[in-house]
Length: 107
Length: 107
DNA sequence: TGCGTATTTGGCTAAACTTGCAAGTATAGA
DNA sequence: TCTATACTTGCAAGTTTAGCCAAATACGCA
Image (cartoon, rainbow over all chains, first blue to last red; front, side, top):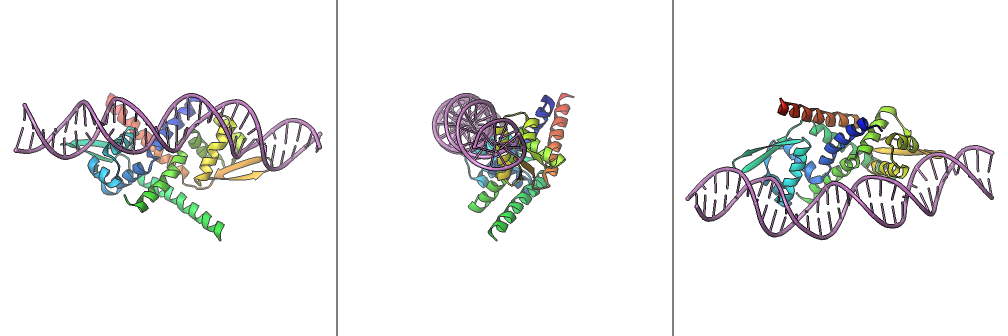
């Protein structure tokens, strides 16, 4: 794998890695469904320490998946790209496929 | 986040995590484009130790993204789900979006 | 100016991930 | 049976990530 190819897949991996956590996937899904949310709302929904949630959001932002806007004392986050939903569909199809295989093994 | 929701996003994260590595993304892409490949071919393409490649493939298999078949001394891996390509499209669109934003910052 | 709320950041520890080498398993062929 | 090739797995070291508490920052309001 030459340097250029390497760089290409590292860039992709960076983005995928940013999504590779249950709390971050949950928040992306939440933002996709309900539009913007402030950190305190997400903290409430996720149920972790706010500092943890803030760091998760920073990772999503760094990857370019979300953007933030400060209004007053609150910071609102929203999705920056629309494809997140198709992403979930894909993951869901893998899960269904896995479930099907398992059932076939049992049958 | 209740236990059921938690489990749902953990299952999703498992799959995303399995993709969250440059070498694994590369191999998925390779399998998507060229059909099945044996471990030795992928090892050659990736350029890491075969043991490392084997472990990466085991992770993809564990997540249900690829399946393997032993023929003779070789083990062939192939994609198990077809949505990987749309996945890449999504990631690529994020990358393009990021690049665009950066250009706007410079302009 | 002083207080309270919202959020980020520093510091630290525990857990998870990555990787190569060496050793073990399996199969084809002499 | 012996050997070479293709893989997989055990082990150990190095790196990254996650999570919490505490401290710092930013803003609205009295």
